[in-house]
Image (tube, rainbow, N blue to C red; front, side, top):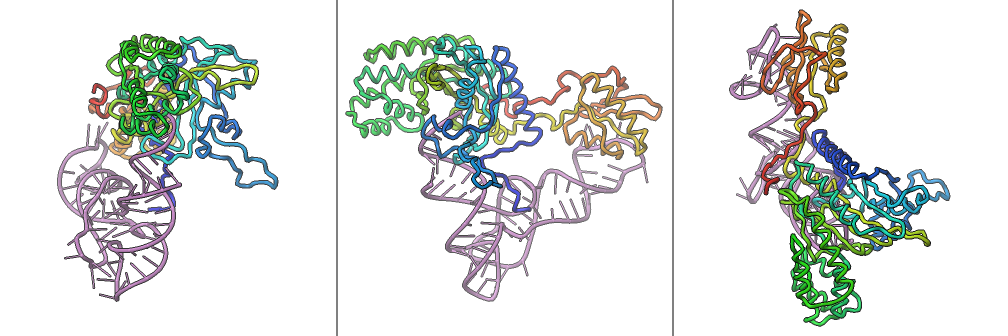
Length: 453
RNA sequence: GUGGGUAUAGCUCAGCUGGUAGAGCGCUGCCUUGUGGUGGCAGAUGUCGCGGGUUCAAGUCCCGUUACUCACCCCA
């Protein structure tokens, strides 16, 4: 074994049959995003460091750019690889505000980089798929509902993935509740409540008491976090806690609207729940917040998150409020691929291998002519690399998952063989087409139970 | 950044209290002189992560190191 060449932790790479899965996911996302009228953009991979760090405390996670052949007095410092797509997008909006139409709706599928310690489902280089809607000065609330609906629509169409549970909350609701309880600063209570996912209520309550709350108040803070419902019944449950505050009312109304607005997309693979624990660590969220769990893989954490941010982008005079949601493409796929063996049924696009009779140039030309005739009708195919025995050529196809092998007979006739069934029939290169399902690589869930669980 | 685990063939792994390396799968060839898959036969492949130490002798014990991995933190 060559010890010098090893995988780099946190930088996943896929084999061709696995890459097909990722490509199909991205294709579907793009298709659905465009169906909903979102325009695609791509931003540069690097941003000025100060821009990247406006988001807060994550400075250590940014990869700083440095040239290996640095000139004297080189001034490359100050650039870093972006660690999400929201911050570069906010910069892009401000930079191009004069040339964009608002509200501006865009999708963006790109690699991002984070210097965190890698783990299952956590990578240092990974792909995110974002959709956001940004307004100038104001942005209607109904876009909060819209981005959730678009993402759910996309996810439910990727039918080889397990089911999802979208968990929604609203920061106004939490903040209003905590203010209504009499807390001076609701922020610590919000981050504490967010930890209920991993820590026991007792531990979180202890955290709050450490922060200066008395035990009873801490308990009341946690009371709201225990509430969740797949319909709007959470509203009454919150009211029963007997806390009043205008912000709380606003949050309740908005959250109820998101739950109701997404109801039409709920189905066997899509669940929507108002979960009042969800607060999100990032501090720029101001209203709606989303997290998403993948059924059977809850330990991965949220695979799709986002929310409302009222002031992420500003040029000092104008602010551009937005709402968006971000799917961790790598977080969804890489664990699925390695755990359940999710792959396409072939490692090449070819639906047909055109066999080669002998080494003569005319033989290759004849096979290429067949291949070109097939390609003219969008049938992906390739000519056999060498005129081995037909058994070997068939095996070449089989190894790659190519379903059909094309033979030209000595008399100039044509036959095509389905190597799965062994059936071989005469065929016309100018007319024959494989069944629709064999035209492109197919992805099927390795474990069908995953989908219906 | 903090703490634990692991490192042997392409892959998954075995190797007991130290005696110079194995299995399954995969791969190559032949049985099968131009139609694969099943079956039979034959075959190839390892600086046992790296460096040092103990020992007559180290894959095995000790130290260091690197990588991978899991948990915390944080997040997609």
